[in-house]
Length: 127
Image (cartoon, rainbow, N blue to C red; front, side, top):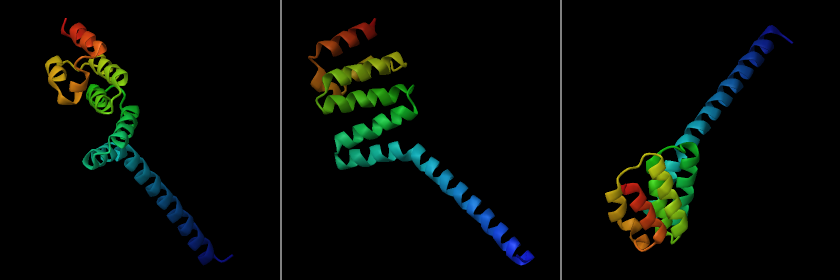
């Protein structure tokens, strides 16, 4: 093999490594932002099950963000899943969400107004 061939092969291998790195970097950036983008798109389309899936994925990436759990509670309520809604709201409160008035007046949670689990949670949180 000539020196020119060896040099070309080395450059080619270097380019492959750089391209591989860039592709992996792009994939990791996309994965980090994908749930929020998917959530926004699903909500814009009115696709609540798809929005729930995106939000659950986002929570998996950032499990201690209270606002995400609050939003999950709202989605669960709109999807007629009261137990899941109350559980998500409870988690939001445990993580520091403290706007009980907002939760009590939120139209997304209105379907749960008579749910004993929600009433108990709101009463306990007001203490």
